[in-house]
Image 1 (tube, rainbow, N blue to C red):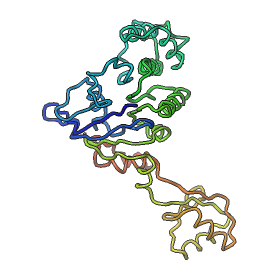
Image 2 (cartoon, one colour):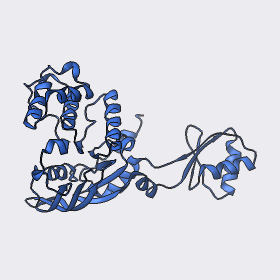
Image 3 (tube, rainbow, N blue to C red):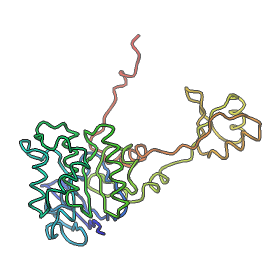
Image 4 (cartoon, one colour):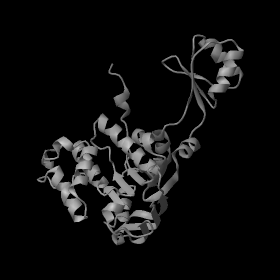
Length: 312
């Protein structure tokens, strides 16, 4: 199978450096989440990999070759960068047929990807009548048309309904299981955490992280336990004696930083304290991502403190 390899990739627009000496690889057999704040350089990097922009420096190759030199590129790489790019006056079927014929593929494959994307019943409808989610499905169908070894998708969940989000999640996992190289750019952290095995994170055009999802979360997590009991005062006193600093939430549960569930459970059992709920908590991808990229965001929202006050 084929990998995407980016080496010292740089792209400048006038005095702005959108991509700054990037080096990373996207390997087969896993879904790589491509993350970063707005303006981080994700879309520019994907365009450079696909030969849609020319780099100022460095290289971006697919299977060791620039995209422009690939034979039958649609059979090697499937990409979705802009779901709005399809001509609105064409039908979904004719849009895909034009791509298929120009790449030496038959009509049967068009029907297969229309069905796979859930568009079989609207294949004869004009694209201008499609919702954003339907256009997104059409763009994904086009990316799958050549049954490619490499799949690159920019915000594939954009506009999809809940069923569509589940569909794209399972599709990405299946493509990876089949040994394909899958690169997915997204702003939806919860979604990314549901399908990504590996993360490449950018900030202001530079590489901030390139590691497996689990390693990223483990590196930015501190052990924490959530515990509930009918004997809150006793549990608090016991935990304080053990050196912990439990904090009780509005729901009555205690949060204990720097501890694991097994430790708290054993302590409660030794004291004869009945436990109703006990679980380890881990930092979410969203929390870890925001912590990593806090200094790399060009646009940060500020909440007006007065909005949090109750009217008197």
